[in-house]
Image 1: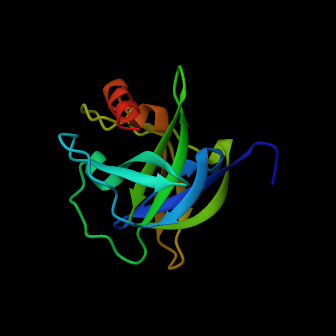
Image 2: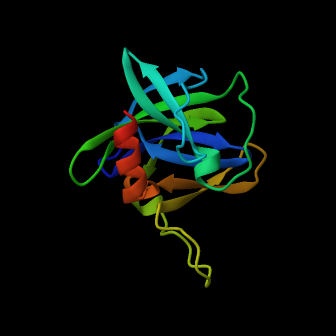
Length: 161
């Protein structure tokens, strides 16, 4: 691995592939339904017991505006330590599946595309073009986790913990 390579955990939501920095992933758990928190936003599924501590857990599908999907045997919770301006937020992210740990060099990471119309892309750190097993090319979208959570989200999730 070259000095400029960065490691990411790739995860799937439907047919789309996303990535989070491996440095922020504390552990990956088999899916267990979180303990529900009343009156939270729809994407906040509740608290997950992570080694005796309640960790706010969000459904990435709902956070990104994708349709909900029932959990399967492949569904995982990525327990993350997300660095914010003033603290580190422990957070569970529900993904349809975890794929692998990969390395990308800085020069492989392209800026988030400008599509000419307003859409919330500030949570995208960049995209990486990848060749699939069938020869089809696709993209991996790399999250900027601190920006994925708005300041209101971060405050709400801190209160839930």
